[in-house]
Amino acid sequence: MTGAPQDFTSDFSIEQNWPDYTGEEHAIWRLLFERQQRLLVDRACQEFLDGLDALGVAADGIPDFHRLSDLLDAATGWRIVAVPGLVPDDVFFAYLARRRFPSTCFIRRRDQLDYLQEPDVFHDICGHVPLLMNPVFADYMQAYGEGGLKALGLGHLQHLARLYWYTVEFGLIATQQGLRIYGSGILSSAGESVYCLEDPRPNRIRFDLRRVMRTRYRIDDFQQTYFVIDDFQQLFDATRPDFEPMYREIAAQPDIEPDVLIQSDRKFEPSCFPGPADCGQKNGLQLDRSPSLGRKRLEDVRQHHNQ
Ligand code: PHE
Ligand code: FE
Image 1 (cartoon, rainbow, N blue to C red):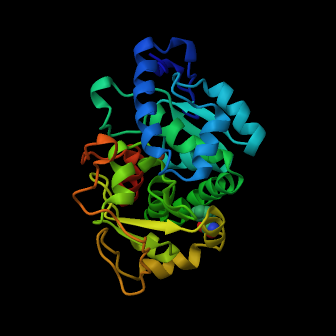
Image 2: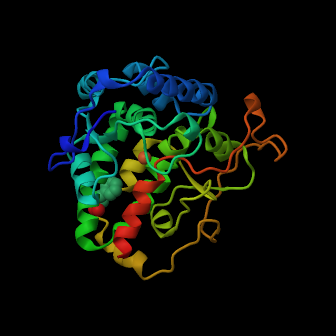
């Protein structure tokens, strides 16, 4: 076991204690990694695949955070900080604002391969960290951390949390090769990796900042709506303005339910989707309805806000 409670410090950081991972823990990583590798090779965006490659994150086992941090630091100035689990919102945002990614160390058990309530090391390292190798995405995450601290002060975390949810966790990106995944919650979920691109049911809407921040989300099932960006620069540029006036504007408007389309929506129209009968049949995959990983953090953000 890594990260015994007595290791806690005031910033919630712990030691990963990489040599202490067991053979079984590395074997679970390998299972998860190999399954996602097959699914993601033509579904994840190139920036993600390049990041994985450059970091040497692979099937051989749970990576050592020190090694990853040195590579990340050299590329974009980010480092990984090991934490025991969810950290308070202010601590989380403060880490991001300082280009530190708080990552869990533990890995799910073998009977939890498809379903886990909280982020684990596979979700954090295989889902989030590779994109931090991309300079534009790396800047977006830092800006999000700064924006989080500001939103906390303004009492608008609920609105900002939706932006994280529909971009960092569940974002899709339109590329020359077609629709691809960049959201970590999808990237670490076998079922949703296929569903988000190939199932005809969910809405796929062109990214619109105000629309995103008005849209509620589900934490207990696949998403009913995905927002599609053109590239990371678009995301960074759209989120650069001061959100304070926008928060007031949005707070005066009704929330939008996760499955609802509104008149101003610009749907992303791929040339075609396979019919429902085809969905999930690729690679012999059975679609599961289990939530992806990493939903808990934002649920907590929302609950915290609603208190
Ligand atoms: N520009 C936002 C603000 O003023 C901060 C932010 C940047 C939020 C990037 C999210 C993402 O609050
Ligand atoms: Fe996450």
